[in-house]
Length: 485
Image 1 (cartoon, rainbow, N blue to C red):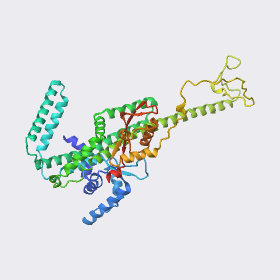
Image 2: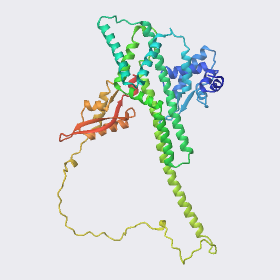
Image 3: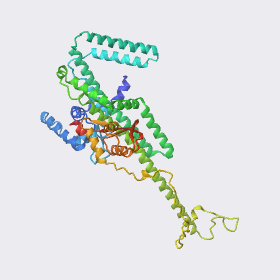
Image 4: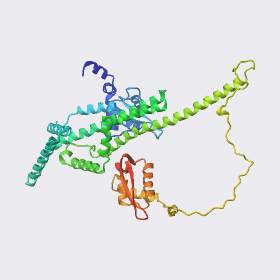
């Protein structure tokens, strides 16, 4: 970090926040309203009410140090290029919402790192470095024999641990190591949640650049779409895009979610960890990660909506341009028809012009005063060469019954896949019942449809023949209110 870089850094929003006169008010309120509860967005009335309470307690303790109304503070913090809050209107709703900017969260997390900890654990960090180096070197090893040797070494270490445990080795643990490893896990979890706002901001910048190109570009529709899809492909195939995709696929696994929840519960239940006074960060980490990832997916989905509106808008503009050209031709023709006869409009070599304008041709109009004549032709009865019974066998699928099955499956779990529901309740009416499940998932905003992952669903028809369909992975998710409860 040289002098010029630090000089430029002073103009960044994070530096301006730390240098602001009301920085203690801003940072303390943002930490309480957004970070401690991991709120990704808060409606304006709710956030203003929280700030009013915060200002009341601060002014009572500091002689009315902050006299402005809460709404004025929020407007100041969300104004300009160096805003500490992002103020926006959601896709559905008339009230604005607020969210922290990535720079603001980074500044607050840096201040949090300055807090005095009970102790600084060095052993756990060294062991983490060793473990990461071991994983990286093993993944980067291209020699098959060398990789096999590494795996055999790990297997020998595991077998030695199992042998010592079977031999009666003491199962006690080191409380100091447990504490420092817990603090390290908690710190990593906070940094992970903080990174989500930066990832969301990167996708939002892509969407903003796309909208600017749509508004200012003079290129044809095909050229512009090719350029936009190229940028979208670049961001999704980048290291950040691939990392987020792998993270989301990992998190969407029910087994991984259950394992994460169980490990967090066991760790926070230890007496040595309770002595540190932990909050509910790890206990609710699964829900916070899902909420943050879902918000990023909605941000990337807005890019597709922009492209759809662009295509529809360009089609409307092109049709409007065609009508304007037609009207200009008609107007010019009327003006030329009123030109004096002595004016020279065109010189012709022939007596009359041999013009054949396509637009001058009339459309076909069937005669209205003539009746259609039907010939007296004897019709022979034919013989069907196919089974027509299927035309008369109509299946009625009760959508309410299918919704009841989904709700019953979600009573004991936060989410359930369509494949699991079909295993509990095999399809009785075949493809019609499967399509009804997909229709329910498409209309439910809480459900997730992953087009990248597909699996097969099978059933038997009335004749006993096995049928099979390949569908995307469908996940029915319980409402967030129920999860938080």
